[in-house]
Length: 155
Image 1 (cartoon, rainbow, N blue to C red):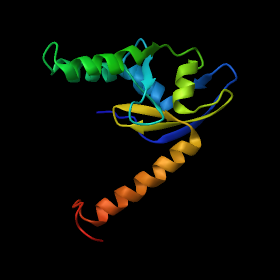
Image 2 (cartoon, one colour):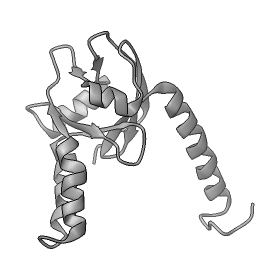
Image 3 (cartoon, rainbow, N blue to C red):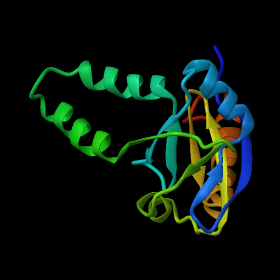
């Protein structure tokens, strides 16, 4: 299974366009030959989340696991789906970041964005926000590994 991995930094132009990293574009095309991606605000971070049609299929599978009219099902539908957009890449591999996406992630146009692979999806972060998040995540991961995966153990 191919995954979105690694981290890339790209420029956002004055029109809010940013190039999707070539390895991510290639993976999106292999997964979905017609291209394009699903993009929306990450509900757990000041970042954007993106992936191919399979990412959206995964979101829908989680929703479909809940019975019709179940409150959590309705919450997921109302809290996620209206905020996702299906975008096409232009001939240069760029996507257009709408103002609401720039605002949610604290991105500037013109400016820079960091693309972060997260296995089946990727995120787009403001560089300083990503640096802070990555530093904290690395420290927590190192502590977890030192404890042998036992969160209660002392290192």
